[in-house]
Image (cartoon, rainbow, N blue to C red; front, side, top):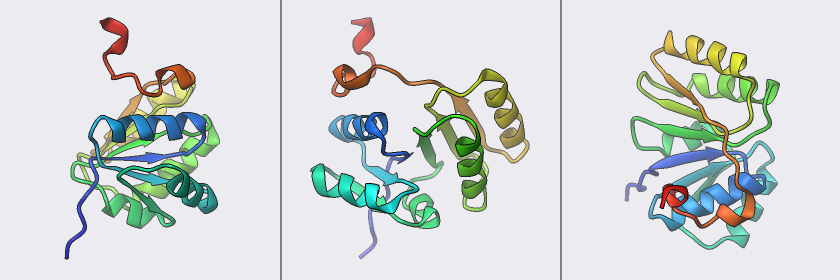
Length: 144
């Protein structure tokens, strides 16, 4: 039996990443999750009901996603973002999308976007904020 593919993948299961993953799943998306510290992924899956797939290997995480792959990064800005992108590159194909939801410096975002564009990948830098009060809000909640 073939495993269903996820709509989006999320890397980084800190408080904001966990809340965002839960929100996406609550809105009907199938979500794959990955965290550098594997015990965090296991704890998240154990403590949160929902339709999540958790992974210990980045390659398996990427293979779990529908194409074009959409990967949301909810990790600390700076070197961790670069290291994560470098870890992803071997597993991505042209047309795949990386969305940086952290607070990256805009020059870093421009540099990453240029580098990934040359590889046929799309990089979107969009800081996410809101905290616990927006955990269950729909994406357009602020405009209604």
